[in-house]
Amino acid sequence: MMKLTTLTGSLILGLLSAQSVNAASIYAGEAKAAAVCSQCHGIRTPSADAPFPPLAGRDLEYLKTALKQYRDKTRKSDMMNAIAGSLSDDDINNVAMYYARLKP
Image (cartoon, rainbow, N blue to C red; front, top):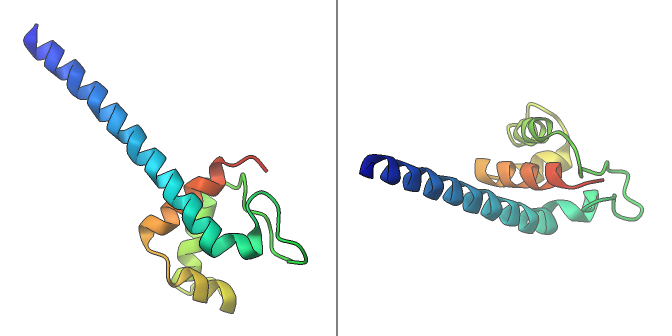
């Protein structure tokens, strides 16, 4: 019985900490998007007079792949190569998670 209680408690703590990490990632993604992405892509809609697509609601894996390709310069755009070049894997995951969770 003690092992079952310990196991259940461990599972609950694991789930709670995973949610905390996920929430922290969303907040980190929001902060990075506001600082780096929103000037051109906006948050929910593109910035005024900007010909760039909105990112809200885009597929998570698409966003991560595109940002990594821009960072690694296998996808070409002078502006995006420069911007994404400064992003870590964690930044990319956080920004992609943030934008993917937004409703357009």
